[in-house]
Image 1 (cartoon, rainbow, N blue to C red):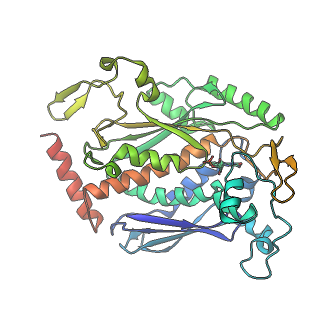
Image 2: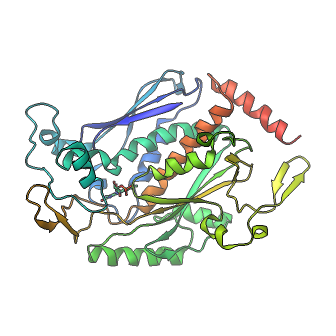
Length: 381
Ligand SMILES: Cc1cc2nc3c(=O)[nH]c(=O)nc-3n(C[C@H](O)[C@H](O)[C@H](O)COP(=O)(O)O)c2cc1C
């Protein structure tokens, strides 16, 4: 299974193609649209999100609510394009001057992209923008629906924003609050403080990042493989997570704290439970050992740096004159941690779905389900 996306932030639309999806898998457009809505929400977003009301168009590969096995093509229109049609036009009529950017923003692809591709910055920032993640959410949402039909559950929460940490309790009430929280945190005290931190950051022309956590529940042991570096599940998940704009680090389970502890306080004892198979007494590994899922929940954390576009911009250098000037300001979020969480959940869904199909190659969903169920039964023998 693979996918490709295309589209600029202020272009006409985002497009994507998924190939290799088994036939007969239920696909709901409403579920994709709901995921897109989730990506757009959250405190700290900029004016752009007020303009866009993302909705997917399923162009091919789905009939009567079921995948056909043919490539699935998707589109998401950029409403803002109406304001950019002459600037983004592909032909000679394009207005290449009025929104030309010659003052690269620190923290963005702007400077290196302009040097590498020998262009002004607009051609770089249009594609480097996290607008692209709308399509990755749509694609992830399609495979997430298949995972959900197999019983796999993906959930996430925000652990910290701008240095304010939520107190995480792995209990139903916490997760219920996460769902209702605009920050995607289950700790109301932290939520309040995050709001205050955001207000202060906005007033100061500053921006905020944070810590995010994604969990994958009910995955069987044996996704991924120890035999080759590029088949390791933790490696694949890390790559997918770090490919999301502004993600600067990823860890699993105990994460970096593992380096601080003695081995006996890190590794998870193995137990056997009749009717359940092999289980662990703890899950410090975050559900992955030797590049394979071990049957415990997969738990990964990621760190998101503060949004690089600053309303009180840092110094930069004009590409032509080499004068020191202030960096340009494109309309921007002040904090996008809750939105990024939605993106992470969906890129994780993609990697897990890929790993499922690597373990259980199938042309139809029925074939996949049969192999999946037989394997689950084998695991608890
Ligand atoms: C959901 C989401 C929304 C983002 N929104 C903005 C934004 O409004 N303004 C901005 O400057 N950066 C934003 N970013 C981050 C930049 O796209 C990113 O930092 C930049 O492309 C450089 O890539 P890098 O941080 O991965 O090195 C956002 C990232 C995500 C995941």
